[in-house]
Image 1 (cartoon, each protein chain N blue to C red):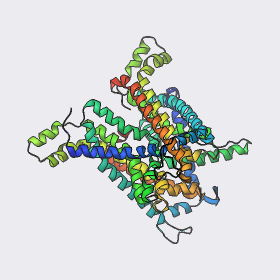
Image 2: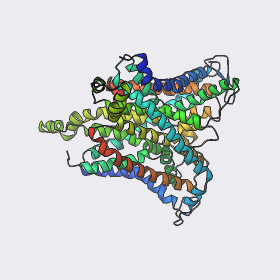
Image 3: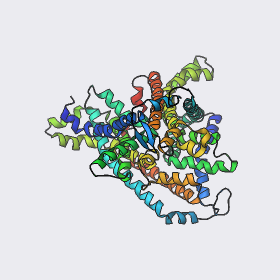
Image 4: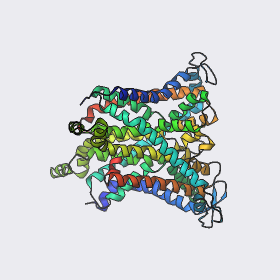
Length: 275
Length: 273
């Protein structure tokens, strides 16, 4: 039984911390999204839905509909989605390769994978400037994709690897014994077993890719501005906190949709296993 | 079980590894390049390391980064371990909301966490100013922000470490006359320790690596290494940043190998993380 005293002795301090530094700030952000920008980084009343209207493409008086923001959101989803797809193409076979090596070699290969993973995120993105600059590719969309894939690939490979590691290969042999051609045997006997890791990997790549502003900021330039850049700009140069707050909720909404799709695909336990 | 791998699969794997290491290699090579603008090779030099080490702001950023990482890890390890224990020990109807609360800091986009804390601090400052107090965004605001994203990782690591143990272990200790504090210190904590250490290590690295949340909560007077790198990169590529990056990569490699050596003998009982 969880009595009040036990709660305060164990869960209490951590829960209180998260309430103060996570829940309250998000609640405050909601409040700000209903105010108006009065000056750079200054807000005032009265309460209005103007920022929310702008997020969904309306002008201040809700008369005209210009879906620029939705276009940026669409572009973010597309860029994050395509980067994730590239991660799948590169990382899914890699996970199999690693999982099927002898034990010593396996831990060495995993170590080789973890080193870039733990190398500072900014350095990983910055290094691409050095490579792509001679080809005049910074800033460009190509650079953004390369940076995204490079930054998020290890997030994808590790969960897929832990799924491949658990694969019961006897099923593959059984399928082959029963006469299935290799590709069909793989799809029927192995692929479904890797699905939990694959979905987790896709999510762990897609969510940070959707929210990032660093990669596009450093490698992409203004033409590839993503929803994260739009948010950053409202808290930087534009100084429009209400609009930035409403945009943040749009971004969180997109992430929640992703998680909801994941929960539907992976079942109830999936969310806990994800971490 | 070892099975033969198709040559195409091996080739693909090594291509991907090449992709992963190309930027790091280029970074290291350019840190020894005797050219101010760095696009072409102009001979070997170590002078950028000298330039780097002489920079006052770099040394200050290193100190700031380590101070933030150490203090936030200390706080989040204590809070997170207690939460992990609580999750393991008590089943309650709050389990689902608690899991939700712990998952939120992990899945919420960095930029959203950063800007919401920026507004939170600004509002708190506004409130304090009414009473004549004030504070600048700096060490404390950054450190508290880091604790916020670290707690969940520590709690979940500790919980998954304890998941295999039966809760009756603690009852047994109590039956044998241990007080609740004694049973915690002598029985539960030693069992949880590998999880606590792994969680602390993860929290520490997350703090070292964080740019986005720090960027929004640090104000102008306080810079950590990632913020310093970002500001430099925005101004243009300078060779001393290559030297700094190379040193950080070297540090990462050493840290990972050391962590591997320390964790391996203890990870015998299938503790993940």
